[in-house]
Image (cartoon, rainbow, N blue to C red; front, top):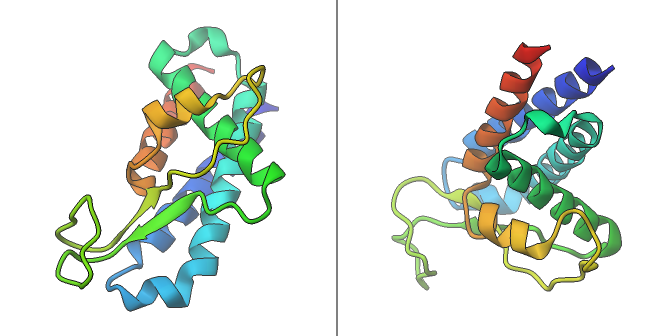
Length: 155
């Protein structure tokens, strides 16, 4: 049964990465913002569905923290319909400049948003701040994908 959830998570992660890779210039953010957000949200939900069914005894602490960060974001999305969990970094050559300053292609970053989490939740703001916040969505998706693949190979 877990194989089905890992396959769905991997598919959704790949779709999110593919859409992010399709961004070649700053104007594509405006045109594809709904598509990007939808793909990222789908990946988040699929990652959490997988994690909830996973035997966590085989995870290293940092891997578990990463999944908990995704749990936190997933819960925030559920409880705040207006939540913007990602931000869009434009080329550094655009004005006005945003910091951190970015060179190279535009990217999608995990946002710093208002914490509406419960202190008793499994995924906490501290997990999100440590593992996701202000980091590139694509890179963190690749990291969680590699963990899921490694766990699937153990089965």
